[in-house]
View (cartoon, rainbow, N blue to C red):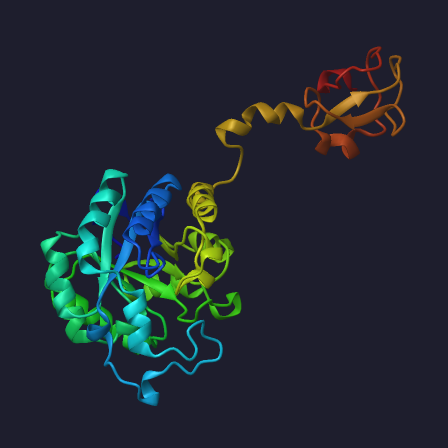
Amino acid sequence: MNQIVRIGKYSVGPGLRPLIIAEMSGNHGGSLQRALAMVDAAAAAGAHALKLQTYTADTMTLASTGKEFVITDPDSPWNGRNLHDLYQEAHTPWEWHLPIFERANQRGMIAFSSPFDESAVDFLETLDVPAYKIASFENTDFHLIRYVAETGKPIIVSTGMATVAEIDECVRACREAGCTQLILLKCTSTYPAQPDDTNILTIPHMRDLFSCNIGLSDHTMGNGVALASVALGATVIEKHFILNRADGGVDAEFSIEPHDLASLVCESERVWRALGSVKYGPVGAETASIRYRRSIFVVEDLKKGDVLTVHNIRRLRPAVGLAAKHYDSILGRPVKMDVGRGTALKWDMLC
């Protein structure tokens, strides 16, 4: 059964406004001041949450020049980069976490992080984070997942690259280790991701299959895919965020700027509000508009006994006479009184 997940001051779940997470990643460019400016910009844009990544280059990989430690994907923005060098550039120093989290809280956002090993979890626990995020590349690291679950905090898991069997193993690992508040994010782990590879129709299928909240970790350009996911039931949207793509940065190519983030916050809420429920007939706000449907009017002066024809009656606005649906059935009927041009036709005028 789907459930409401509580993360800090926010409740996340079906029927609730989607939670918008701004992912800082390495877009701070190695500057704490830029990181704090990003917090301010994300808050001003209306984001509900800020997320960091907690690792060091040495907790991610080995300092090795071996060819297996070099990215060789021509479609990757990091093609040719040595893994250790990339993570050294992109990591968020652990001593920055507290001031960043404090600034986020001051600006009304919740703040949490993705730990990439157990030491990161231990550190984040000292900061009393309200939730944890498991990145796509770690969604098969069940030792880490169980370690996170044992904290008792809500867990958000990106499912990039994972087969349905691997997601099932991940979900079982979370729940067996004590996680009772779980959110899975549909994710395509390419950077940027292409809409054709995103397959967001999987969102309602995942919700039914794993009985938990489903969101989207979105690496596509723009907001279209994210907004469409809300219509499919996504309760969380995560997007990488940057102050200005032109400044560059490790994730700049697929990150959204403040105006895009503000649009995402606004438009995702509009999509959510528009979902409503299955309903036919006028809603309250439409009631006044019913008057401006069409009805049948006399358009030529008629004498008693004249027959109604296509020339002397028409279907016009407003709806103050016989409904337009009766038009065909009254043609050829005589009137039993004189009727002036511009009169809305009534049943008691007809023989």
